[in-house]
Image 1 (spheres, rainbow, N blue to C red):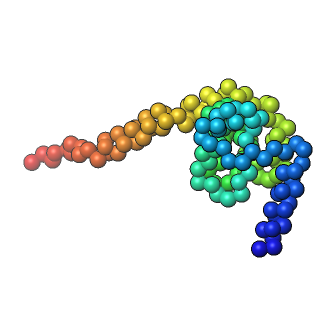
Image 2 (tube, rainbow, N blue to C red; image 1 turned 180 degrees about the vertical axis):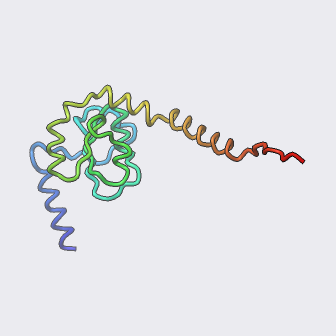
Image 3 (cartoon, rainbow, N blue to C red; image 1 turned 45 degrees about the horizontal axis):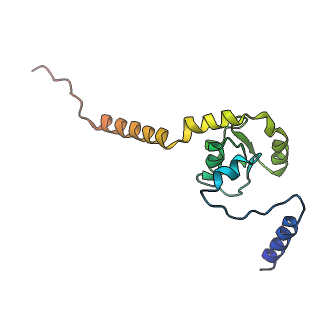
Length: 145
């Protein structure tokens, strides 16, 4: 228990700094405006996130992500195009310094190309069609009798 209280005390101290605004949880309705106004999304999650929806939500707003290389991050964030994939806090700090090299318009375009509901539905349909085609009986060669 003691380490948790110590950690919480440390966090409270950081939140009291003048350049920190604790926003708390926001609704789905508030996310687009909030993420659009962000310089970048820091996704410094230290566990193998199976699918980082928040990084895709940021991309939908044209907002780059700086994310630890955990879980599905490398499948979502395109390093140097839609954000930066980092291995530790030092790399994250350096990535913040390079964030203005990324194009918000290109990030939004990559979202459109990769993650819209329409695009994903079309890809599911293509996979299902491939499975149907593979299951169809194929005419065999008849042996000459």
